[in-house]
Length: 516
Image (cartoon, rainbow, N blue to C red; front, side):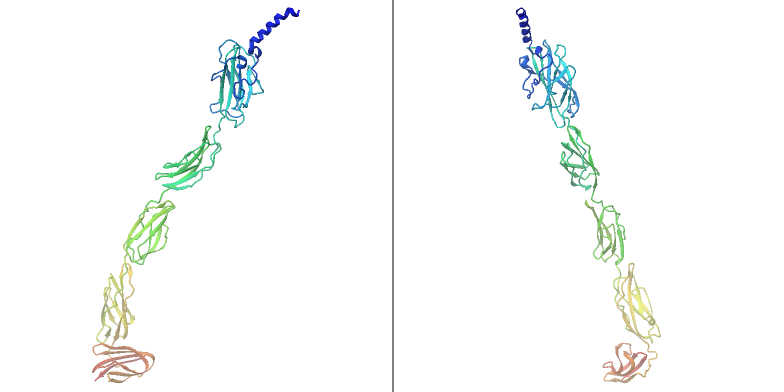
């Protein structure tokens, strides 16, 4: 019996050996036959021949931007071989070092081998050349993953290799942090702005207000910005970017300032009077300080730095000038001319008689010189009479009952005020109508002896005034002597008639004296 069946056994063995892979692995390829660098082997070990590389045999629904870790995707393997025989495949997701990346999940007509590292067919046949299975993407940071695949048909038969490389999807950068840098800037100034490193950003995109220019740093965390003459206020913004998109931006509102514009006209009196207090001002601008200057001799008493000043006006003409300034610099200056109205100059001392005798004079004229518009005359004491006139000439009308010394002064007047009083003109007022007036306390002892008049004083006054005049009214002596004792008056008196007046308190001597 055994000998009789031997030919059949040999025949079956020959068929199995001649069928090769198809007969030996009809339900899937062994692990590590994808042709990857890590596997180091492919289907030619069983199917023979030399493997060729054909792109596009492995496809997927993974987006062009890359896979998202932990997401499940569909992978499709297609065997394009057209020769006769059954078709099979094997695919594995690996990195360049051959390590498994992600997890395979078998689909219809496929199975896993080598754990979850390889997927292959379950039943090779002549009609099914496409297999779809799932792949769960690996953890974040895995980087690029290559699907290596080997495809065979019959034995001996051709073998093709194909790959699909996918990148890990990159997430858009995080939200930008606060922008740091000055909030208020000046036109024509260069300022720096920065932002902290943004997570995931490979570059930084900055935008600036109209009229501003990014000079350096675009694409980095810090930029230098020139705010030109036409720059306007607005936002400086920045956001991070990478291959995954743009992050949320952060903005900082910037106020662009200019140096102050020229001030308005100066409000104030252009023809002030000397020594007067005046107010000068310009329209106020917010954030602006004002630097004032005034003509020589004038003094700013308050307001320097503000838009309004008080000035005590000096004697010099000139300009009041103001310069506006702020943190961005100075604006154009504005000047206001002053034509100072001067006070009258000091009048000269009045010129007129130094002595009047009411016996023959009731009024006297006095003159002065000064460039005043008018004049204010004054007579003291008031009991001496009255003075009239507003020009450089005034007339004194003497009181008939007054004798003694009178003083005349004058002030110049104009629209700015009055000058100080001039020096006084002293006039001795006499009345010789009833000249003989004796006093028991005052006696004339001798007249003309040795050219002197000798008088004896015996009054209660400490001093007495003495006035000696000749017959023409010329004052020969005007002095003061003690109220007691003997005194000589005059010197080298010639023959003639003289008038002597001595007053000591209530004691008065008026006497005509004949010198022979």
